[in-house]
Amino acid sequence: METLEERIKAGIRDVPDFPEEGVIFKDITPLLNCPELFHEVIEHFRARYEGRDIDHVVAIESRGFLFGAPLAYAMGVGLSLVRKPNKLPHKTFGVDYALEYGTDRVEMHVDGVDDDSRVVVVDDVLATGGTAAATCELVERCGASVVECAFLIELDFLNGREKLEGHEVHSLAVY
Ligand SMILES: O=P(O)(O)OC[C@H]1O[C@H](OP(=O)(O)OP(=O)(O)O)[C@H](O)[C@@H]1O
Ligand SMILES: Nc1ncnc2[nH]cnc12
Image (cartoon, rainbow, N blue to C red; front, side, top):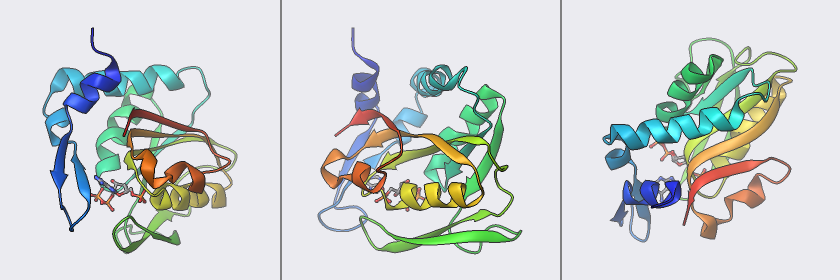
């Protein structure tokens, strides 16, 4: 019997040299196209956070939305979006960060999560950790606390956990 991690890895396609030479891109589209596996992933996260007084899921653009939205729905909690610059219509907080390839910035509405609320941050991939660390900073600027950062995939060799020091990290498939 395969483990969940083995099944997830079987649902991920390695694409060499995308989006630039030397990067092995983890393509999650086969997993998304396998309804049993997609359901199992969301159900795993739902069960993990059940009974832990979670108020919001914060999902990171864009692939994080694919996991954060069904998780928030399944948990019956609010969903708040962390987006690339100039996408959100209301007043935002923003944080700049370095990516595995290039630099970027994330923003969240200033009222995206409530004061003193308990948040799970969700994304598909933890690589260098810049995106997730910037997201934790945004959540904490709103006065909320990050209970855990949840990822489908962790690229351990990029040491993303170091940038997330002080935060709990949970990844389903580690490379
Ligand atoms: O740990 P890091 O080095 O910060 O990298 C991880 C981020 O990179 C990818 O997003 P990307 O910017 O490629 O955007 P996308 O989800 O819209 O494809 C991925 O979905 C994470 O959000
Ligand atoms: N190697 C990679 N594959 C897929 N998504 C990523 N985000 C950052 N690095 C990535």
